[in-house]
Amino acid sequence: MERIKDSKLETLRPVKLYRLDLEELVDLFSKTCATVQLFDEEFKYSSLAELEERQGKGALIPYIKIHGDRPNVSLTLGATKLSWVMRQQSNHVYAESEDQAELLATRLSSYLSQRRRFLPILFNWYSFLLVMSLQMAWTAVSIANRRKDPNFLRNHSWAMFLEACYYLLLGYTFAVPLVTWRGMSRISLAPKHSDKSFFAEHGYDLFKGILLVTLGVGLKWLFDHFMK
Image (cartoon, rainbow, N blue to C red; front, side, top):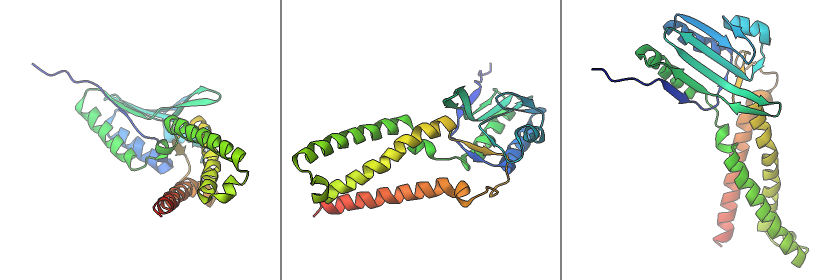
């Protein structure tokens, strides 16, 4: 008697990868699988060099799939195109019910966990709806109070702070659809640290740091204000 094994399918977080990372992923496949192929949304490739020749050196790839046979293991990264205005996140690793395949899937998952992005924590539709609800609530409160007192914002520092937060979050509401449309993974055929500008390379980290500092300062200000 032998227990039936189920195939393994794991959903991964969006990742940030460069050409060297892709080479290492393909190498992991090559060490375990008899054959390895790469796919984008239109073509099938036999090597990373062939993919680069088609896409262009240093190109950004919205979607890539690496598939190995014997054993059967597949890795999909990026976002598949649903329409001209929307993409669906597709970050998965699949392995058939075979020990070597499951071991490779575990190695792939471990490797990618060190290169994942945390955009989904901030940019998701639940957070988007929450922010929209808070903005509508503050708009209603602000309008109602300014009808009673035209100088409502000037007379209350906390109201000025919340008004500033409103405009900051307004930028967030525009960013969510953009990030969702582009996809949250960043897969590049360029070498690491080869982006043309400092902001292109570190913009996400800067944005995350500024946002966290702003939220921290705002929460401390509110705490100090209401504890007086």
